[in-house]
Length: 436
Image (tube, rainbow, N blue to C red; front, side, top):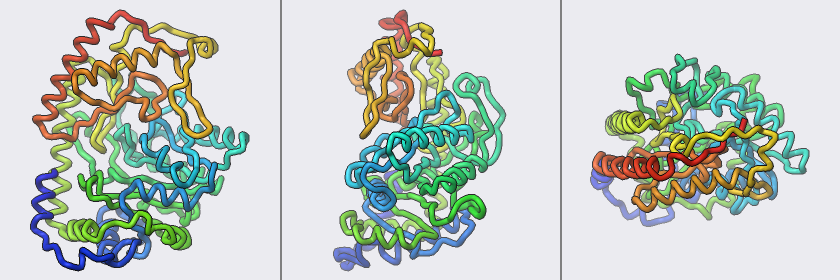
């Protein structure tokens, strides 16, 4: 969609006032007004969104950094379920000094209500060890899974049953997180940067649609001043080079006021604010843009899963949001060796990921085979993101992005196909560890 957006922006006049500081470091009134109308129209909020409820900064990364400073002290923890967006770790810790605390699934569906139990366990573990938990971050829609938390149980498929134990996925999942946060007085930070990047194809027609936390009546679930939304230009609007992100906090003016005291360090440009405000208020173009973006994402998704099906590669079923699939390449790297859970610590353990105060271990053999596969990909000049970067709980998972022009996707899949053929020839007989 870059050509369409560039054409739209090229038609705009560049006024002299865009060379000034504008309305200051918190976001222009024009942009905040445009955002409030946009959220009211597209996110179905229970309470009307107002311009004064926004804080604008130079990208969603800057917003996460600001929120971490606002809700956590140094060495406090913020819970995020695995797998998770790789940049959260540095966004939370670089300036605030807080700790990202990944929450392991332990075999549970990451999108299910059962996952809330894992948050409870991790919170108790961390606070017993002396880390005060201050907040949770939900990636909604989820990155890297490309799935939504919403309101119905889709029919199970053979593929989904292979990959995950299907449980009830509903708006009750979000409500369960609200109750959990209320119980422990935690901030619930909902990262909704892919909210409008939803697509549908015949193969994912039963996937769960997106629901914003704004659309849930929080009465009796959580104090409304604990709920916050992160949004930005980078994903839904394909403009990651125009740095602009927002925090929407409808019921916590004190938090917004405190963050304004340091917002000048992430001041968005007046030109970027103007471009986004103009885009948000041009509804005919916006409706065309979202519809066309959804159509193109669906076409690329269909091409991607056709390739995976032909190659015998599994992926997490139910994806319908974002620009990627969470794909399972474990089967390519050799037959399984079953290792009892109690024996796990005896199998060449090696540290593979660290966040402040935490180390994760996996088998040395699993790490080596994954690195070998990734090296093959790099040698073939095709990049898919290793699960290591997303705190995956087992090697062999990759986030595969498909939101590229058709000709680029075609070349990428051809290169990936050659790598897979080579891997089958060279590594098909090696062993893979699976813990039971």
